[in-house]
Every structure is written in structure tokens, then in C-alpha cells.
Length: 247
Image 1 (spheres, rainbow, N blue to C red):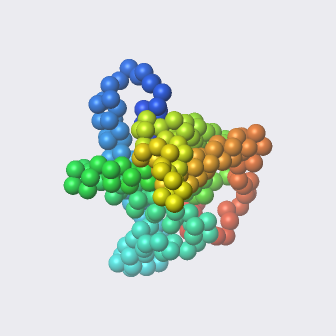
Image 2: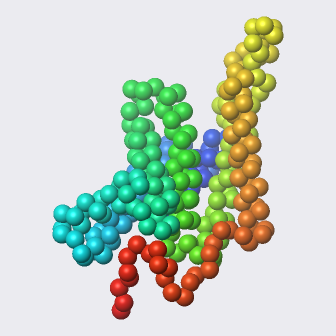
Image 3: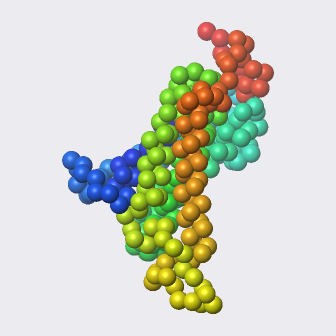
């Protein structure tokens, strides 16, 4: 299972309105958060490089320059990998990598772009997480089929989704709370100063509904046992990218 599938439970808990006591200070959690971010980006890059190295290993019918170019294109160019399940799975993983690096490194230039801008952009880290899990479910060598590792991966998403929903429903910042939307001038004065615009209110409400739908969907997967896995074939499928070596 790729190691870059990340669970920021401490971050999600720390940012909702209810006071949560932990044995660690805020500065320690922040430092762990930054260290984890850099480690995850390094593991994602290593995962991609190891995949490219594996492709080079199996491309024995080409010259060395063609080996390297084919491995690079299949690994890092969207649409370059054109075999089997990798057609959708590899671009999804590439999207996770190409989003994770700038979003993670923006922390170190937040004073130049502004804290509010950085905070808004940092929220898209959840997209990296979703893409990483999706990539793993589609193409992870030990969760591809309907066996216990796949079930465990699904189970790990339930606390993350639940904490995300709690974070959205009870945010720490007053400006992020889902109060009544601000009315236009023609409808009279606003109900409360600083309230969200109708569009902002709709976006926030949609986010909360989406998180709730994910929780319900995960519970349905757990209760039904239908997690999208397939039976492991006796013979490897013909769409495998390379013929595997025989011991």
C-alpha cells in the first residue's frame, strides 16, 4: 500500500470548536505536521521513481535512451501510461503528486502570499488525500483485489471522514461557521455583520453535505461488504503492462 496515503487526524481535531486536550503543545503538533508533510512528499516522489525504475527494468527491447524516456513518460506525463487499469489510476496518482508538492511548500512562502490566501489554498490538501486513496484502491498491488487489505483501507477512511465532517460542522473560526446568509441590499440590511454571501453560504453547505454523504457511503460499504474489489484471477490478466519474471 503506498505510504503517502495520509491521515491528518490531529490537525482535524485541533481545528474544530470544542476544546480538545492533548499531551502535546500546539507548537509540537505544528512541527509534526510540517515534518509529516515533507516526509509524505518525499515518499510520493520515491514511489514514482521506484515505479519508473521498475518500468526500466522490464523494458528490455529498447535502447537505454528509449528505456529512460518511456519510463519517464509512463510515470510523470498524464496519459503516457496506456495499459489496463493504469489508464485511469496513474493520472490520478500524478494529480495527487503534482498538487501535494506546491500545496505543501506554500507554507514556507505564506508571509509573501498572505495567511488568508495560504489558508484557502491549503484546504485543497483534502483533494490530494482523496486522489491518493483513489489511486491506491485502483492500482495498489495489495488492495487491488477484494481481500482484507482493501477492507482495512476502506475502514481507515471512516474516522477521517467523520473528523472532517465535525471540523466543517463546528469550525474554530467564527467566520467559517454556517450562519444565515447575508441578504442583498434590496432585501434589507444584513442579518448579522460579516455573514457569508449567498454563494459562499451555498458552497459551505454543499461541502458539509458532501462530507456527510461520504460518511454515509463509507458506512454503506462497511455494512454491505461491497467495496469494489475483484476476485484474484488464477492467471494474470492479459492487460498487465509487462510479463512478470518467473522464479
